[in-house]
Length: 261
Image (cartoon, rainbow, N blue to C red; front, side):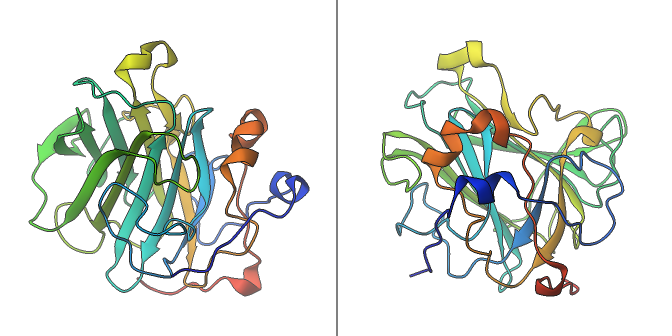
């Protein structure tokens, strides 16, 4: 069982400051986070196996109706996400989840070598791509490199209504998709065909998978647990999404360990 971490006050949320660990070369530093280590084992099954399974990373908004959590298992070097769309419980062939990574945060106006895109389409098909300087080429991940599952579930501790939950883990040190020590670029997006008027919901908002300069930034990492107050309860998040979409996470320099991964 992991330690539960709760939001303290709205003031603490709104006064979060970004302190960069490492050098940010590209991406959009207005949307940045620290890579924190998971404090327990994540079960990748498309649902919250424990009530606090995803309390180890910052919760970031995709929209008024969606969030994601990101952290890393330092034992397996698996980077992992939980992505949720609170108002989607329909199974559409056009739905997709999307994660983009810029391995060295070099940015660019078009995807290049070391830029990766992972699409899960229709809740059934995973397709991976690497940039070629002008667009994307399909690549094949190694066996066991990516583990994922998505379900319509009521298990989320952020929102107990029935909705889609994606859990995905990628081994970051070997295979077709390799990302080194932060800083890295990252973009997370979802599309719900049943709510097509909402368009693509993404972090950073308005970003394009085809423009790495628009990705957010994993600015550094810490092997310590995430500080209390940086995991944001969904009621606070959704009541304040208009001001939180650009918030930053901070970590005091003396509390951050920078080590090779």
